[in-house]
Image (cartoon, rainbow, N blue to C red; front, side, top):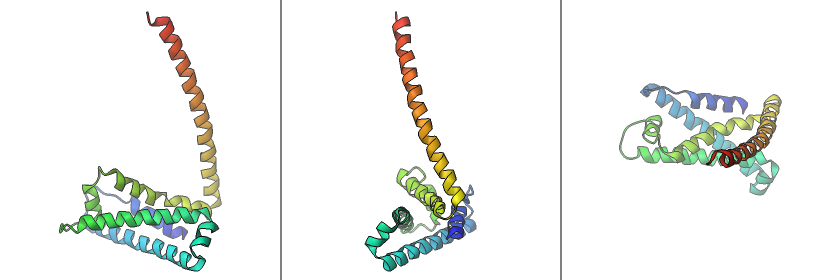
Length: 162
């Protein structure tokens, strides 16, 4: 599973401008193959555990299923775009929707699949945990800094407004 996630991530990060048709067809087929693998994993787990046990077993299962559903929606939108009779690949169809916020969010969900590696890779889990603690500490400092800036702004307005 780890190699599948890393392979999918590498496939999604391959990009070229302008689009090279041969590469985009291969990348499109690889992305579809990875999505079939993830969908089959989800289906096997749902059949094996049942819906209730699948949801209650581990919170990462819910996260994984949300990513699979978001990926399926992304693929369906690209297929709908391609059904207009225009012969192009999914990456070229994606380039027509570059300004679409919804498509960008769906692609970001697919990249966030790398966080699933934290379950298997202990040092990666420690790294994510350390980053989370750092973000919490930075947010406390940012609130304090904002309060200090607000106070000095009010003092400056009182002293130099006239």
